[in-house]
Image 1 (tube, rainbow, N blue to C red):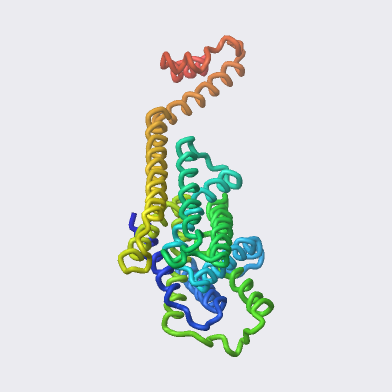
Image 2: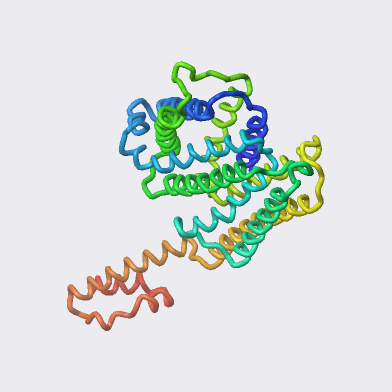
Length: 366
């Protein structure tokens, strides 16, 4: 619970600082600085916890090369998010539309990770999708710019790119974190950030035609530095949430950010109160809360069933001992030739009558 609460607060900071950081800086320089700091932190943590020899895993090419597609998705999604704010996007709208990540994550996690959801959960995910679509449609209506801060087509394109690429990166990152024989968490995070550094360097060199490496910090101010800090924190907290919980749980946790940002915008006058939009936002919040509640109930029921119906550790040990004793009895009977194998009582009968030990002792005496 503490991890989720800290993650929500950091997520809120990302949106609020992004709104303030409107200087003439190059967006990729912020992300490159964040990823570079993450690489340094990952190597330092590995050295501190596992020794200098373990640091080789953080920079070994075969480790980070297989995660380059994930790094590309994260890098481009962050660029798209910052572009949405550059296109005069407001945090409340971007966050509300960002709830589209929840049904998209659930759908792709079924296809890519084999995750299973109940029929009720799919119905609620459909409600979230409908509510987000309705809210976005209201924002794009003619005259919405004057009434409630409408969204432009460029902003919508940037937000959609951010949602899709972030979902892909999160799911593939979860598979890397939870794979059998996976590397330690800090090592995987460092491998991902190395891929991001290379991706962003290529972006600055070949995509940003006006960028010059000698002017890396051109346009930076205190809000730009704050943006590096909140992106840095959000990166590591997102990884911890995905590794400890799941990608879908991460999407549900962002519902708290959604409520806070929309309420803050209404309270400060950043958005005018429009009843259809308010009801659409309320539908998104309620649907996300219902999905979270069903997920918790489902996991609790599954744990109850497994504890009630599954064999206890003591019973499992008894059954294993009986199987071993039965094998000893069969071998002894066959060796002395005094009893054919088909004459040996079955294991179930031995367990029921409690004769495993006695039968084995009789066979050995003969």
